[in-house]
Image (cartoon, rainbow, N blue to C red; front, side):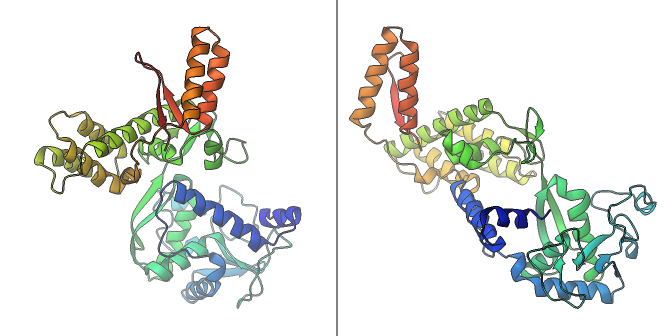
Length: 386
């Protein structure tokens, strides 16, 4: 069943309204995570003519066939299908796996245009030379990226699960349409975010959203910091304990920047001993985006007593141009409201009376009001959370 069509029936909204709702939610989350929005944000529904033209080019080149009302790409029309995933073409051609689509000549062939699909009441359809229908999943990405980036571009990203099918099929159709010339120079694939049960998924009920983290009191940039702590090609295991460690580290970084801003102005030209950390930071980033090594340089800079504060601040700002933790936006320490101070004193009295349940309840209330509380030998330290 078409998920968009099902959702449309459940909500009474059009599929376009539903798509717009999730588009807004996606970009809202990206903004909170300080992810820069692309200059061009293109919709598949706005680029159907480009997809049709690309299919016509593939048809003219002898790479397609029509069966059951659908247009398919024939992987037997090229010699290097599966090169990205290092698939063995002879094994694929043997048809070892029987596909549910009996129209295919080869089980690995894929649809470019559907006029007859498993979804009988498809909500979005368009006219085409092959009949009223809609494009296949893979052709959308190739047609749009080539429209805005050209027939050859530098970097294509995605998750590792896209390698064996989606990206493999993108390469096949794109290079076939461009005269079998290389399409993309570098492929960057991110590993999965996992938990104790393995890969997180919506169907498994383990789907993490930014809203869930915000409702639990986490700054979205704490999650960004957590992601920076792992290499993009290594599985990152999520747990709230791990996220709490990142929260402590992030808040410590913010406190350091706040202290530096209160004591000095950032240097215009940091000295060599400070820049050595920045150079090592850049070297780590240039080494396959090794963010864990880069973050290690940040903390080494902070702990180096030989580097003056103004140079530290300047280099931290330069590092953050890449890390995106909004260090320049850190505000000076604000006066703690009397209400929060009163709650802190009330909590201390409860602790002295060994009413730990009551003490913990007040601590949670302080956290819910947006303040962090740290107990020290000299008494509690209260700070406004970013």
